[in-house]
Image (tube, rainbow, N blue to C red; front, side):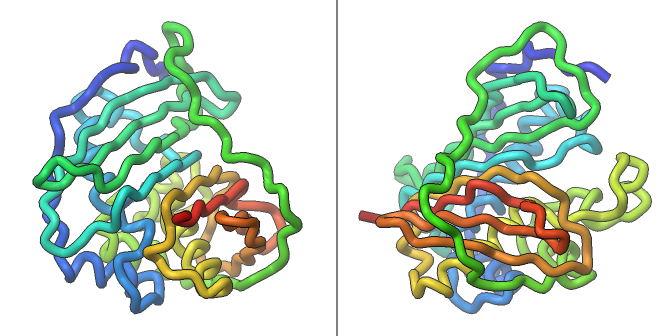
Length: 267
């Protein structure tokens, strides 16, 4: 399969999302949290925007090969119940990687007053897909290397049903996370946990450990480096370094599944 880099620059019409209290509460509850909104809630309304972008740009045919590779989210202000958001989505980069084609989506959410709510660069890898037409656009920069010594702060027990619960609470539907036959046909060992679920759970543990509030989060960055099968146990390692938290999440073999995690806090 081949993916053309000519897709870079393609923008879909903005999608609309109505944020309600039920959605905000369900996302937090699915992570075992009672406080809301969770800092990573914007991924919920970003997903339909990326779906629309992939559908209109022709990328949807590669969907079974898609895995989340990187995320960089800026929270301009926390989303609130009653927000009517408009989410713009555009393809901003296509690069070649050894495992396949690497594509970056840019998403910007604004409220009814056109005030920015969140902005994200969403890097995905299309496994086994070759890029044709040459590389275009700038790759999403890696978060800075950790400057502090990380210490274990928490464990995360991932239940066998975690991906199904997250799917329904986040309203993010991708069958590689819920349909074993589909996942195996896509070349995966079985269903895997969403990258954003791993990130959200890690953020929750880090904030709780350092007694930080969700509202203190300004920016979240990370690189996904491994698949999370279910059930499993993850370990979060973190350090508070000034106005940011550096963290890494490791699987049962001690290998990172989430690298270069960074939470920038409000000044």
